[in-house]
Length: 296
Image 1 (cartoon, rainbow, N blue to C red):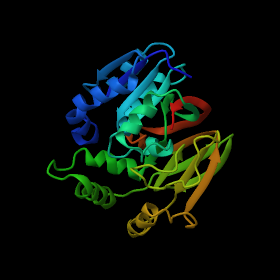
Image 2: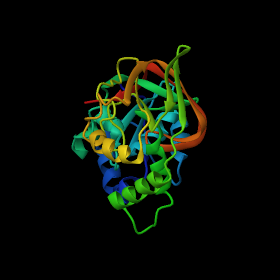
Image 3: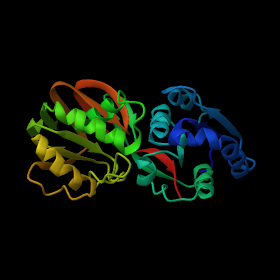
Image 4: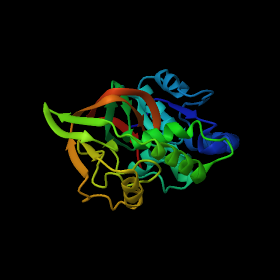
C-alpha cells in the first residue's frame, strides 16, 4: 500500500554520531529515493522527541526512523495503534529491530528504498505498562548493567565500559524475588537474575536470548534466568552470548500473549534497549499484527 506521505525522523546522535555526520548525504539520498512522494525530514534534538514527532505525522503516512533501536523505539511509541506504517534505516549500535525485520544486512541504498517503498508486512507489537515496544523487554541484571554504564567513567567506551559496568553490578549482586504469572497461573517463583520478554530472537546488539521467538506468531517468548551466584553469572554469560544457554537447569522458557512480572522491589528494566523507570510490577502483552513495517 502506497503511503500518503513520508516523514523521516533522523537521530543525529545515533551510531555514536554517525547519522549526524552523514546527514547531508542521507537527506539527498532520501529525496532521490522518495521521487515524487511528499517527504518531510526532521531531526531529533533530545531523547524522547522522536515520539512526539512521529505522533504528528499525517494520517496514513510512512514514518521512517533513521538511527538505532532507540530511534526505532521512539517512532514505534509515536505511531502505535494508528494507521501509520514504519520504515527503518538501521544506523545504530544495536539494530535488533532491523535484525528481526530482515533489514540489518541491507546496503544503505537498499535500506532507503525499502523504508520508503510500498511493500509492508504486519508485525506483532509489544506493550509494557501501557507503552509500546518493538523487539524486547529485559528486566533485572542486563538492565542494571545498562543503568550502571550511564555513570561509568567517561574515558571508557565500548566493551571496556560494558565490562566495567558488569563487574560493578556483579560486585553488589543481590537477586530480587520474581513471581511470573500468566492467565492467573504462577509460572515461576524465586530469585531471578533476569527475565526477557521478547518479540524478537535477539537483544543487546545480537544476543540470541530467545532463539525461537517470532514477531508473527502473536506470542511473547519469555526467558527467565533463575538463581545464579556471582561465579554462576560469569559461567552463564558466555553461553548466553553464544546462544547456548537453553537447556541449563536454571534457565526457563515460556510463551503467551500476556504476562505479569512481579518483583519484591523496584527492579531496573529496558524496552528495545531504552531504560524504563524501575518498577516492582511489569504488565507485558503482545498485540498480534498491530504494526505495519516496510520490508524488502
